Amino acid sequence: MDRSIKKKSKPLIILSTLLIMYVITGLALLALALVLLKLQPEESVINIGIMAIYIISCLLGGLIAGKRIKERRFLWGVLTGAVYFLILLAGSFLLNRGISSDTVHVATTLVMCIAAGMIGGMIS
Image (tube, rainbow, N blue to C red; front, top):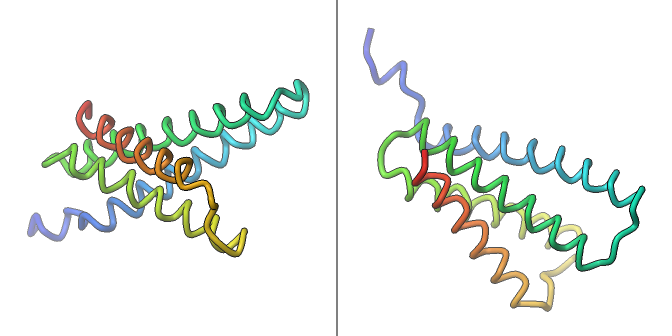
């Protein structure tokens, strides 16, 4: 049997990894919402929780992509983190009918997603 038929294409691997990342994100956000319901913490604690979820999701996504692709792992981790961020940005744009005016927050989230994805790819 031809090996190229058995191997998944890289874009398909990235898309399936992104799906896993968003499932992780959704479950973690649900858990965070339950904690928020019980504890009612300050807004800064909520923002830290959301950023931690983004970082963990991108780290795991980079790890998964790196293990599945097995070449230039850090690069695929960076790509996975960047695409994850772009999908978040697009979703935010659609829900809020525009991009947040807080460019520092948007840029920080971009850097965190890319860096976490890259680290995940490097340790895979």
